[in-house]
Image (cartoon, rainbow, N blue to C red):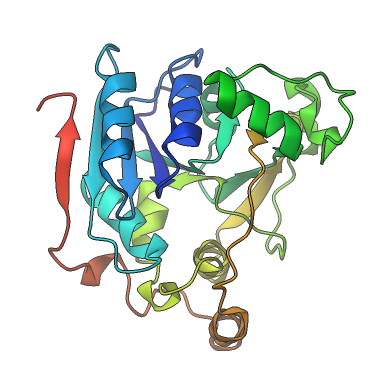
Length: 276
């Protein structure tokens, strides 16, 4: 069965990395039906990279942007969904490079009643710097020194299908390799803007609400591979506040966002697209 898929890429002021992410999208064995760049207030260089990389392609794409008012990852992802049309949603970040079978793997495992979470390989800092200087991705060998999460570098889809057992709950959750049906996203009212103002935990929050709705998770081992570019972690992380909000979600068994997709304001624009 054919599924229309929207690939959402969140980005903020790292155009060199975003370029490699976009290049890897253009090398997919199965293109997304549309690509939405969810831009959390980047400068003009990011817009140039998006346009220069995507305009020569046949891919349908949209670049949505709102003003830089600090970290607003939940809001920009909700805004991206407002400008999307796919039945199935795949979320990634601008600091990952995709295996050529990434989208095909997600779609081969998509099913009603569960969402998918993939894994990532962590590239060492020196190799990341080399890649950014070159401006294009060269896949590392599995035995490269300093490679993190090395086990995630094996693409073995037959094994991956055997290992993908539905789970009613999961505590290790990341939004950089996440997919779900649009209907499930809307059912829990998308991402919660209460987590904006600092980075992190908005991905765990939506996953917990999916669990509370009875929607399970399948972990994708040996499939949907991605390579994470090394970077420093921002010090502006309100860990105590975000963890507290996540804990309240768990205790209250929330199944809808408090300030979610249905409450999205009109702020934000499409600054470019394949049709503009």
